[in-house]
Image 1 (spheres, rainbow, N blue to C red):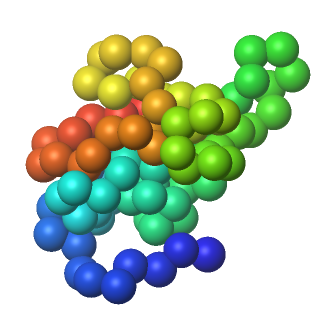
Image 2 (cartoon, rainbow, N blue to C red):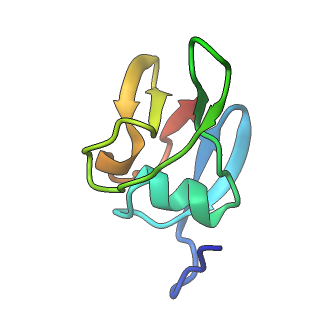
Length: 86
């Protein structure tokens, strides 16, 4: 679905797996490019959710980032050593 125009230059940790990424791209873009489509599940029904707007308006891309819950993946730039989970 998503394809990078330039090669990855770092790795990030997503739910215990190392994934390729580019420094400065959004965490949401890096996850989508790596084939991760569901970032979380809804609390009530357990339905999978992933990025919708990619600009911080919808909150469907919430992840746990370096231990902090409910961070919008579309608003976080990738940096080496970044660790995130659903």
